[in-house]
Length: 520
Ligand SMILES: [Zn+2]
Image 1 (cartoon, rainbow, N blue to C red):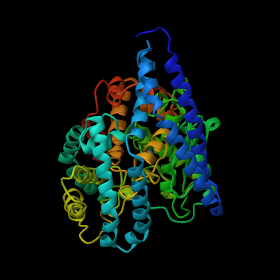
Image 2: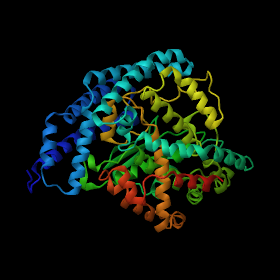
Image 3: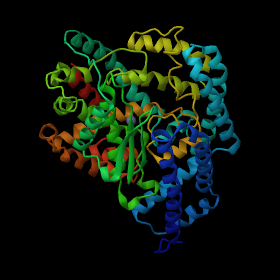
Image 4: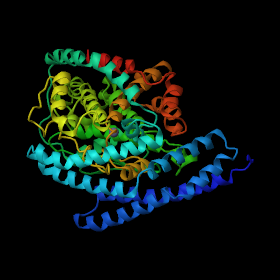
């Protein structure tokens, strides 16, 4: 029966806004725990947040929602309302799919594994880790099977769907096998070229206070909205809070300003996406960021496309000389800062990797977790496969070196996803929390880098990006991002969003061109 009203849809809107208010509180408690809370507050805070999580999960999985969705689908909705309904259903389905006892078992196995991992990794104790991890893998496979059956997807595709709705193994295989054909050679060429280029690394003391004031200057240049957000410190940098009040954090190392400064540029990219989400859909799933990969595309657009460009580094050079009162220090010379921020280094550790070698780390993890979740390999096969793939992609052996090999990442041990670097998305954060298992998350990093390169390549056709950065008024760049990405939130599927913005779906050629332009 079709009606001209949208009573059932409206009922859903107000229900989801209620959920959103609890998510708001949750996000702020989480930010406070990371940025402000004294140690002694930890237990009570954990209990309060756990209680709130249970409450939100209950609201999000109410059985009556199924009827409300069915009723709303009978109403004559605008296309935007239909998108909104689609996203509500998606979140509900994701949250309600798993039986409570599986979620609980995952939480227990994950905490046990992660807790022991902290010392086992330091001690390079694979055999100890393996015993706990076995259970995490087995429960994640169970989760993947349940999700896959409900969604009509293969096991690993169902896990991908949590982070990158619409992305499949087939499309990732195509994209990543393309990258593998040219990346190793490009890395070698870049290393050869850089071997002859001089670099002066920072030495001395860079006070927290000076670094912070530099960070704030850079955020102003990037038009961070300080009426709707702030910068603080935490052990693990993140972008949290809510779109109307975005909280980004960084960590300062007084012997080196390099990482904290670019970290702020990166988190500002996440933050501006959140701040730019459409107000008309505040509190609704359709008003949230599209996916982990698209979120990362915005932070990497800020960091890799803008932040590490020669023109932007001219600003960083000027601002850092001022902040550190170091006009004559050769470290801050434009050409030297550019060297620092584009240096390529083949290393073991993903989180320390540069722009060029990073995809190799991600593709290795993707291939392993894909086969692990699909049951093609067993968890005991992982160290040897890791070694083999590191040798093939970066020429590094990790044989017997588990702590710098397959035991380095926390993602695969932590089913609650709390350690996922950027807990920017309330809905999604809650999603991860309840769905368990961070298998399927790794590809988002490299998808983000690829989307960012594609957005830049399209933007360059209508915006004079170089001139905008040089002038110090980057508004035309942000206007493009706002029109094409931020304001679109989750109105479209990822493929549609990217096609509308760039005329095609994700194409690795743009990423290759960007890297070749910068490193050859
Ligand atoms: Zn990020």
